[in-house]
Length: 188
Image 1 (cartoon, rainbow, N blue to C red):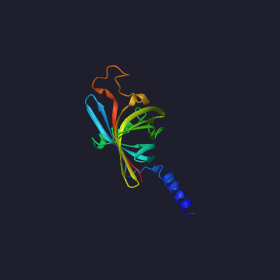
Image 2: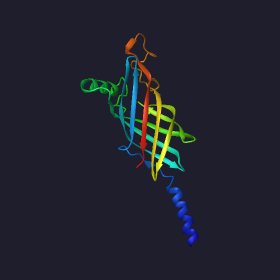
Image 3: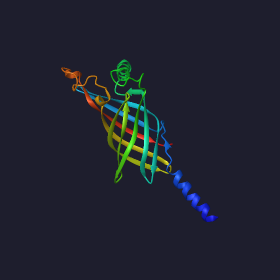
Image 4: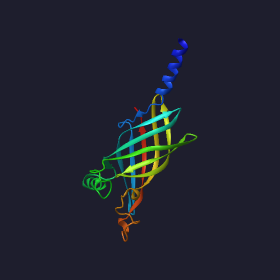
């Protein structure tokens, strides 16, 4: 009977250790930087939720949901900040009224030392594109923190406003096609 109990206990522990853990919106953060000919803008956007499944120190599955309605610039204040934030949330860019969230769904992981090379599907404005980037996983007890950086080509998601890849004679009004994301997500 002890042998059966021990076997069931080991199986239950192994099964329970592979459950996906919810991502904490309060302990997660996403920072963005967008570039233009005359400089750059930066800001934050909130993590709405998601899940990570970690087994033996390796991310196995994951989904991260970003709340685009929270998109905020940090390099401007007052009226200028309101104008930029409103424009980024408009149909020219993220169209948050119709598409309030963006989602990343993990498809593949390769581990190289302490680097997790992640590949997955990113959906923005209803358009899904595959993205790949490096990240690092830190674990403390049952909590896991995944951190990384990636470049996103906004035009692949239909965000073409101000892109000199699509419009001529923009001069110093041109906005770079790629923007940077620096993220940290933590499980509960």
